[in-house]
Length: 168
Image (tube, rainbow, N blue to C red):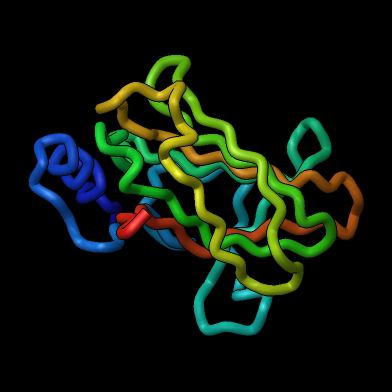
């Protein structure tokens, strides 16, 4: 099942209709139209859900690219009220880079360090840091890299969602 709802929700943000606290973007099994450098695996940390495991890209880093031709969401004009959350896990190096890609050459790049290894971590990406992406632009791609070229490095993703930030 593909999620066509996030683009509709994005249009609602821009139109001022509001939304709930969290809107799903994808999980390991659905919400994307294409997944590059992605292998579906059982939860590597012992949970009941499945996850995506990245593979080595041409640069030697663990890589994963999630694409949705319909779009994951549209960049809201009130971006200070929203953040993207990715549930990631790693083995090896904790440093990751995430890029949100919109139509054309618009993108936002985030560099983060996960708080731990061998477990799921919810990584927040405030949309206020996505100033290169114009309001209303549709996000079609989410790419994640683990900054680890060793054979021990492993990158996993379980799901992603957009969350409304209250009280910030």
